[in-house]
Length: 303
Image 1: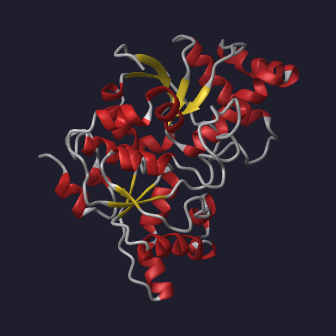
Image 2: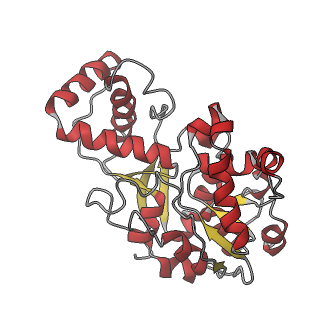
Image 3: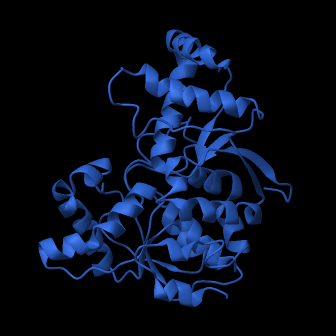
């Protein structure tokens, strides 16, 4: 990619306002370093991942997505990007359904017309990780590193939603595989850290079930933490804000339930990049927002 910045319309998603604020902050921090200009969708709304499946059929969910995309079109036809796995899954899927089905598009636009909006365009909805792979390039990330994270061992935990089902599809950018994705480990190595091999890189944490009924999902998170610990990881890196929250928030409960002694920080790959780019560990990387602080990573940051 050239030195000219490429412009994207950015959908932060609900988690950016709370538990995933450090993902949002670190995306905003590293984007200009990687020649990306991101402009928020004005007056964006929830994509429906949290509430859109509760009654009413498919239309309410699609209309929430349609409204965001209609608002995005008001700002141009550049690609829409998001860093949240659930936002990506829901918005990308909704966009493809609206574009492909005349009846669904008409129903969505009938609902949107109540707010004076319409979505008949052909926007692309993309995950930030896919943009890093396909538009920026791993080599570019490595070129921008001024503070290599030498000696940091990282377990790349992709989770399930970021790569399933779209990563290997044409509409999803064909940027990686579903079963053994490499992009997180590539980002880790580009930052100068060591990507450790372990057994659960795409395991599910239980998602929203973990929030509502953690007793049903603690064993899922335990397996992920155990595999990372057995591999000698200093931190776990995940692109998914729900995975990040669940894996950090429930470690005390897991330790109590299973007699383990986990205390493993779970960070975002953009936090790694921010520290590796020599940025402020708090203002840019948001490391102070992690429930379990990584003393090793924070110690590597330039103050």
